[in-house]
Figure 1 (tube, rainbow, N blue to C red):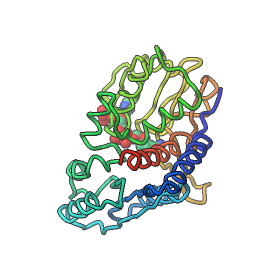
Figure 2: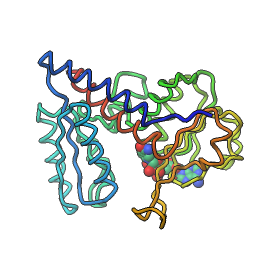
Figure 3: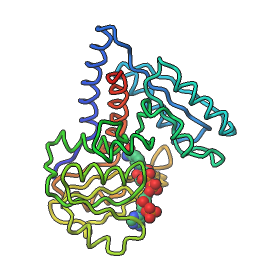
Amino acid sequence: MQILDGNLVSKALKANIKIEVDNLKIQGVKTPHLAAILVGADGASMTYVGAKEKDCKEVGFDSTVLRFDADISENDLLAEIEKINNNDSIDGLIVQLPLPKHINEKKITETINWKKDVDGFHPMNVGLMFKGLPCYLPATPFGIIKLLEYYQIETAGKSCVVIGRSDIVGKPMSILMLQKNCTVTICHSKTKNLTELTQQADIVIAALGIPEFLKKEMVKEGAIVIDVGISRVNDASSAKGYSLKGDVDFANVSPKCSYITPVPGGVGPMTRVGLMLNTLEAVKRK
Ligand code: NAP
């Protein structure tokens, strides 16, 4: 069994991005600039945005975080997005989700200029991805593809089960695995024979958000298992009072696998690098 080490791979990819950014600066091309909008004070969202700021610094990007109170109106937020759309110094924009209930996420996503939509959530980018055309891929599936490529894992002809069909992970992941020539099955909460399907799969990608859902009897010997899940689980032994758990029962599943991602240190850091790659691409396209 080999661990697919997201920390190691993301470090290597970030070092490459830094080299490209330094070259852009030497050539007098602009420094990539990522803006993030954070609404409210949700602890996890603040942590994610903080991590993105840190990544930008590491690879030499400029970054701006625009913070708004949770009671900002939808119209005011849309106006802020338009301002960034029209600001040539900013190459990429992300709006940290989830947003407060009174704000329509769909409207927000569709208002971001798709050329700055480095999260890859705008329908234009989704359509381009579906067609296999150049676009911004959603960061998590993009990061997973990069991880598989780094370890030179052959995907052609393999059967792949994706558990979860969200717009940001499951659905795009299934399209990308199809483009990698896998035979793809998508499972969701209404799937009846899930265990039967995962038992047959060469690759299982678990993205459902239920801690330790995938058990050892659900995977076949030699399977490749990618664990996207991140759940905070109460843990009195941790100083934070919680620990992070993936969707895979790692201790019992990992001995059966040929490759597996840990949580933390697997898909999480690759998602972060996916966003950095998209932001660099935004400048290159200019
Ligand atoms: P989501 O929007 O809540 O979607 C969950 C999906 O799982 C849904 O499609 C749901 O089916 C399906 N599901 C729920 N219970 C199921 C069950 N018992 N059997 C089969 N399918 C089931 O979640 P998400 O945004 O895709 O995120 C999934 C997990 O990945 C979460 O833990 C999230 O925190 C994590 N995540 C991690 C990263 C990272 O960087 N590592 C990035 C994004 C998300 P229905 O459609 O039928 O409801």
